[in-house]
Image (cartoon, rainbow, N blue to C red; front, side):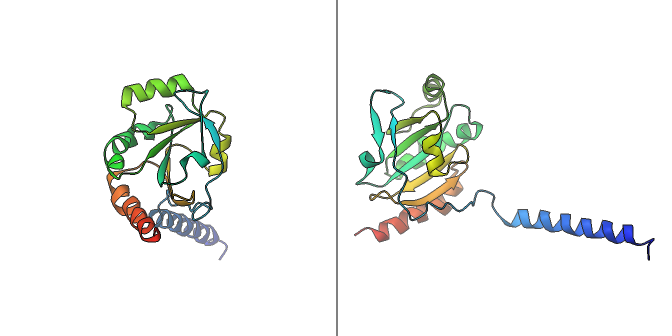
Length: 180
């Protein structure tokens, strides 16, 4: 029996490893449930990227649903996501608010100059404090906030055509059903 113990130990490790691989292939790592869903978006007052003497607050955005997109010039996935923001997301008809996260304003402005600016307004969260309140893990992330300031959807990772069809459009349809 003692001669078979290493073999049984090895087989147990292989089984655990196999289960771990199977588990990870069954669950989308982008599906981290946000505690903000169906709760008020955090209050914020942040400077505008294009004019730091002016601010945008949560209160300024109330009254109409909007998307809040977390991006940064240092974010590689933001480059991949950007064409979707420039076209299909704009076509959905909601304001798109840029949330520049832990970024140098000059680098962000240059990045937008190179890639285009899809945003209706851009706030700068240089130190990341407001991002912490939103539960931002990293850029890109996108939130759908309703007219009353309630977070209805959160996406961690880039927006893709599939995400627009399978997640964002259904979230917008659900939001439309809730509105009077």
